[in-house]
Image 1 (cartoon, rainbow, N blue to C red):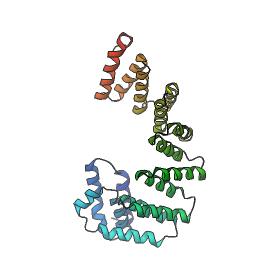
Image 2: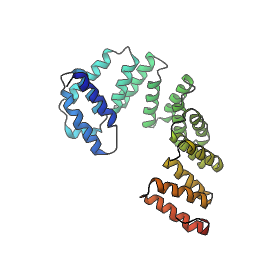
Image 3: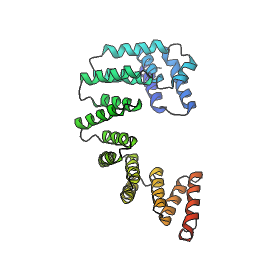
Image 4: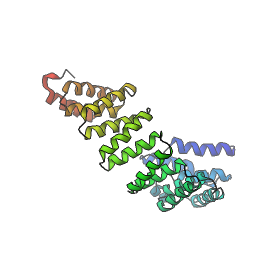
Length: 276
């Protein structure tokens, strides 16, 4: 097989089998990548090593990969050889984060930013790293920095809104989630979390408006429909809740969760609710 074809095959494996909780998928990914760790072409070996770091550490350790460390060092050397580019430090940061070496990951992202102060990918990954290790104040500062650099970066507004919601700062989170929804019109989760935040604040009418607006674009989104159904339950709007519950059942006929929801509506809505 042509070396370039092998290289693209490695990248394809990494893309088609992303990080997933299902261990069999990760095992399959590892079994496909392992032979490429000893490929004659360095680019293939190093890309395979990078992709292997995306597999959970316990699985890597169990397999005792013979050529992994060697190929991994080659990858690091390659990135260090182009250290005048912020992308190389970003790549190293991602690698170290995959390996659980968060201090080195932080340093790498900061090195990238030091080279190019408005290098957004490094700011984003640094913010997400801080969030992952519980340094939310630092994460907040990074997201604010991204917004300062790119005022129309919807993902930054969304990420900051989620972070603030996580900290129960819902009144602040609302503003960022609303802004994100204006900019990022293709992600239903933005609308879902915005509506959920409004719901938690007791602003139920506004939450309903957000959910209904979202369903104009994402008419079969299960999470949004479920959120709307539970909102109607809270408002004791049994007929509206029943309509949404039936919509959920059409999307997932075998869901025990939906059946329980419909039973609850039936028991509490009484004759106001039509036949199932």
